[in-house]
Image (cartoon, rainbow over all chains, first blue to last red; front, side, top):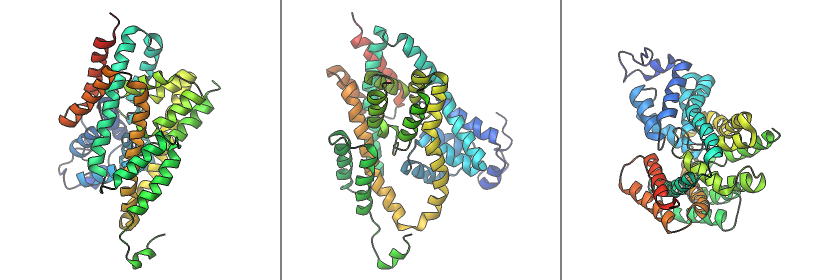
Length: 203
Length: 175
């Protein structure tokens, strides 16, 4: 753990200087550690390592990157790896971050796949898996509640949320169709408080 | 082996549906992997998705299992690249532009507008999974208990999924 590059004499001030000397290998290694240890949700582990330990990004930048990650398709974990890797070392940095982030979980799930094929229909497995699946439903619901508290800015947003659920589960719309139609309506609802002079800015 | 082009097509498509989280792609994933290509059954999909929640890293690594079952090691690698490649590329390209658009008033509108829709997609995925996972009083209780504990206490969610396995063993193991 002797990382000379990320351990300068003046850590708080000089983020840009230290980040220009970060090696691609360091990026891979740090994301590999995050990818191997981030049990139960990746965001706190990302913050701990990127903001606190290595100081590759500051707190404000981290929040900014996270909000971009959430608006884009893709998982937070991999989008953050790409954004931070790109910031530090361009294309190669992004690729290094992405591979480090994915490698441990992928190897683990590969082993799970083999094990499941061998023992998946054992009574012990089916009993445990029933409980695991039920707990996972509770976990996703808690994510929905947490995100709703954080990301919804107006009461009426719940109408868009419900419309999306109905479109996918009841009307059996495809996800892209629901995303585009309800998404456009919601974006129009949240349109900038129009002053006429601002219409110039649009494309 | 012949499954690999199909794996790449399906997972590259699913990749761009993961707005707000991997769960958003779940309804579509069920249709494509279970009903169209029959790479696995719906209960198997639910099982590996749920087990995947205990693994570290991005929480959709369960896709590796589907790739592996349909196309071996090569299938697993192809699935992985197809699922993470397109969104990584998009993140790479958009991130810079997005930062430059800081002053653009519609940027906030897009962020605020997409939030309820992406949460709705997560919820839709959750309901579609619950149809297969919540089969009775016991599983319903596990789900509600997990939800309430997570809302009430700051506890690592992976531990609760492990807890679900223990409760499952205790309640569903044939005597």
